[in-house]
Structure formats: structure tokens, C-alpha cells
Image (cartoon, rainbow, N blue to C red; front, side, top):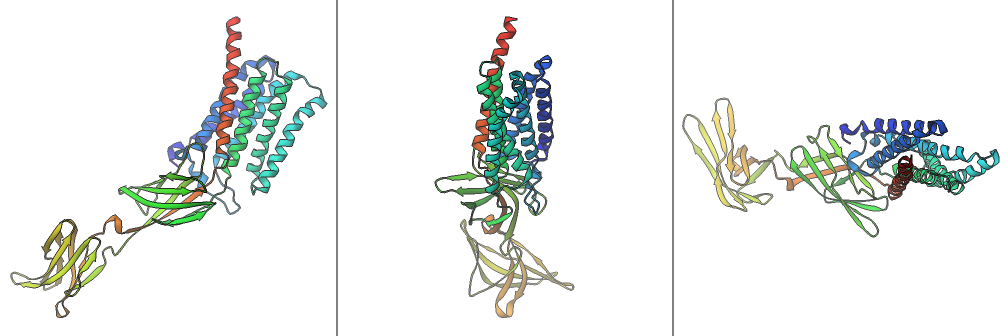
Length: 409
């Protein structure tokens, strides 16, 4: 959800709108030279739209906004609808060239209407009640069936099969793309580091969170399905606790997408007073701290030391934090323990043989992290790839005859 990709949606809208206008204008034989540029614009716009569906880093930020009614502000939904309109426009030149009478023209449209109704009904009963998504899937079905119907009728007309293959691919892409955009999603849900959540028929396991820098958190997520698993690495960039940049992760050709929303970090006993007495050492991670005793040193000021034995994996050492006694009160001073950090005295209770310590910020191993993520399914993404491949093949086949005719002329 990078701000730098927000210009992609308006650019795709322009490409697809221009494609539709060029293909509609090219339906007139006098302006048939517009069909090629229109097909090219349609192909480029569809491939750019496919990239926003498949590449997780190109997920628009507005797609995360969901209204109470379930609709979202995802700009890609409008892009898919425009692709369907442009695909419908690609059918017009072939339909006009057939010069079908009224009844025959209605008959050519009946398969499209039937498939549109069927796909729309299936989508509705599967829970998709959003008008834009419902219309987009129905439009894709209409383009698919109409392209197949016209391909049989115009099989021997120059360029018609290639144009119908292009339209067929776009129709498949539109129906599958709209379905992928409106797949089931969890919304914001929380999962702790090392814990798992069962949702949408999958188990989402947050294995760990890496913090390679103060402004980068990498979530190691494993999604377990019925027969497979998927390892993803979504990221949050920015200072923890402030506004962060979310970078989603997913497979390119199929599978769900994990969108990180925020991360809460809680450090155990950070900067809290830890009381230590002679009878029981204090454990702090892999470090053990024992109180040896107290010392008083008189000079320009009175100093009171707490002698501590600090045992780390690297060895044992003695450090002596303490306090200055002045006429204004006591001023603590810290002592550095190698391999552990500074230890400061918060209070000395010599009568009971104990000392209050402030330990250094503990390591990441003692940080409790809770991530908020959004899991979204993309149920028909492989079909969107297949539709784009068919559209590309149709465009390439349409170029070959045109190139041969140009050479003959």
C-alpha cells in the first residue's frame, strides 16, 4: 500500500476508457484502423490491473477501508468493470460485420444473457450482494458467452477469431478478477507472536516477528490449509506506535493475501523497579544478579554502593551501582555490566538487606508482540491469469494477419 502506486488506479481507468472508445469508434469500417490501438490499450490496461490483483506490494491503500454494509473503496473494482465494458466494445465490430437481422442478433446475445444470469445467481447465493461486484461478474459472463457465440458465426472472417479470443480472455479475466476482489476476508484480527488463529478454513500462525531496524518489522506468517502451507513475509515500516506503512504479502498466482495493519510491542518489566535481597538471586533472561553487600564511602559526599555479582553467558563480574547522598537528597548512578547493560539503583533498604534495581531494556526475546492483520481470499485469481493469457494470445494472433496484409499492400 505504497503511496507511490496510488496513481496506478486512475491510469488504468484512463487506459480502459480510451480502449472502449477506440473499439466503439472502430466498429465503423471507415475507422477500422482504431481497432488495433484499442485492442492494445485494452490489453495493457488489463495486464496492469492484473498486476494490482496479483502483486501484494501494489495493493491500494483504499482497499483496506470497509464500510459497515460490507462495501469497500477498492479502486480496482471500478477498473475491472471498465475492463468488462471495453471487452464488450471489442465484440461490436464483429457483430456489425455480420449484419445479422434483429432476431438473429437477439439469438447471438442469448448465450451471453444466460451465462450472465447464471454467474450472477451463483455469486449472489455465495454471498456476494454488492451491486458493483454482482454487475461485474455478470458482465464478464455475458462477454464470455457472446464472444464464443460470435466466434462460431464469424469463423471465416479475417481477424474475427483473434478479436473474439481477445474478448473471451477479457471476459474470463473480468469475471475472475471481480470474484477475487470480493473473496472472503477476516477484517482486522489480532494474533500474538508464537500463536495461531483458525479462520476462513485456514490456520494463520505468526511464527515470529523480526526487527532488523527500529523502523522495520517483518512478520513471519505461515498459512496452513487442508493439504498445503504457505509462508508469507508481510512488513510494517515506520516507528512502532505511530503511522506505519503496510506492505502485504501473497503468492503471485493464487492463494490468500495477508495485509498487516498494526503491531503492538510490550516489553516485560521495562524500566520497572526490581527488588533484590541477599537470599535469592534475580533472573533477567539469561543473566543472574546476586547481592553481595553494601558499602559506604565518605568524601566530599557520601556514597552508598550495592555490590552485585552479575553472571551472564559470557562470564561472571562484579559491578557496584549506588547513590550519592547530598543535602538535596539521593542521586543514583549506574554501573555498566558487560554483555547486559547499565544497572541503576532505585532505592536501598540496608536494614532488611535488599536493594531496588532498574535493569536495562530487555532484549527482543522478552518483548511480547501482538499483530493485527487482515486475511483476504482470492478464490479465482488463477482464472484471472488464464483470461489475461487468452487475451494476450488473441492480440498476438490479430497482429500476424495485419502484418501480412501490410506487406502485401
